[in-house]
Image (cartoon, rainbow, N blue to C red; front, side):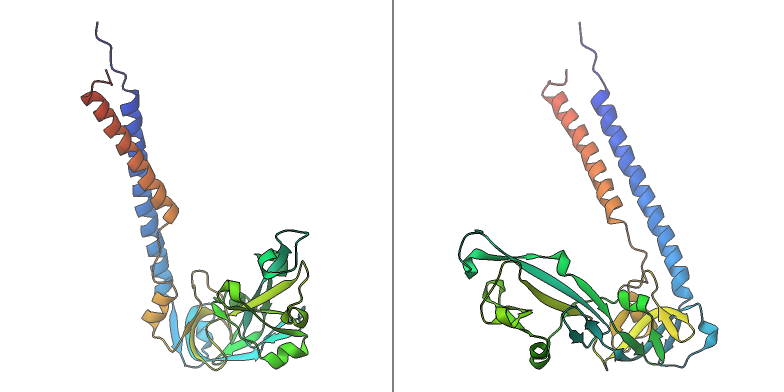
Length: 276
């Protein structure tokens, strides 16, 4: 008597493929909706350039060009350091011995990232005739390592440290550390600031609230180098595209691949007779 073939595996494969197709349709619809919403927002953006303040633009997203003026530099009150930038982030590495009872040598020291030494510092800045709000500054993209004046460091009891093991990277540490004398728990620091500096011509995208610009969600970065036209500024800030959910795309691909593999496996089993 012939055994009846159970359709369980084939049915499961079809279900998985259908789920993948449904996820694909959902992703396309979501992307289309996002693009439509973004397009509406883009259409309402006002290009001011280097023009003057217009009260009619209050509450609207504007694109402003002008020179970046750092009115008040960021200040690290813990280490007593002035950073001539509108925003700065301090990262830290903490030293510990590989062998706790070993010698205090480079070979026995390792430096691990230390969240306890992390710090973010804001200054005050304008672009053209507009003031940048704290919220705007908090969202400035960082990416340039800040270089300190050695005299300023010396006044604060600090110095520049060069680590040969870290491809000659430079850090900030105490003068004792600069003499090669270390203690477990020592910290060394680096500071990152925006690519744009005081006096640079920049283009910013923000929400106009009288003479102040606040941050607009979706404008990343919200400050760009140079005097840009509207189209270029929107494209470089990421506001001209709705974007696609990477997570949804990955799930869709995984579901489709899993379903196809299940069907292929079922077919191979039929061909060699093992599925009977």
